[in-house]
Amino acid sequence: MGDGVKIEPAKPEPDHDLAVIMNSIKMNSILSFLFGIVVLLTAKCSLVVNDPQSDGKYWVFGYSLLLLVSFAMGMISIKPWLWPVSMISAQLFASFAFSKGDLNQMPIGIVVHVIILIPCLLLGYLGCLVGNKKTRFPKRRCR
Image (cartoon, rainbow, N blue to C red; front, side):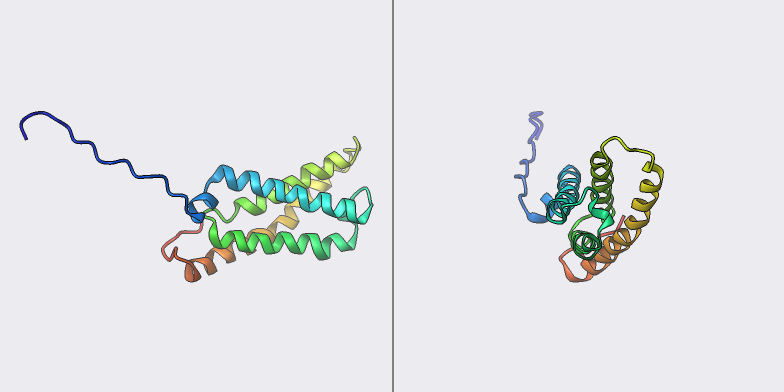
């Protein structure tokens, strides 16, 4: 005891649990941004139009997929707002890239993307509330 020798506690091994991976902010941001671009590019290729968001099939299939993913990721992610914001931001940037330099509609595009973000955010937080009751995170705060 009086030797002055410090005993360091053992370092815990990294936890490779799915919840730890999904709660990584960088991983969430990158995956959700890429997912948003993939949904828009898939719609663009399958609909063969310049702006897929002007077609009704995008709103039936693509936007519904974004809503579903927002809810599902809200159930397991600590930050339920991160997936919807990143996905819709990716779609905003991709739609500006598809515009081929015609940026006079940029202000209305930003407003439209903010409006379509609201249901995604609400479903993300609803998923967080449902996830608190259904998953192993009963005391998790939705922030």
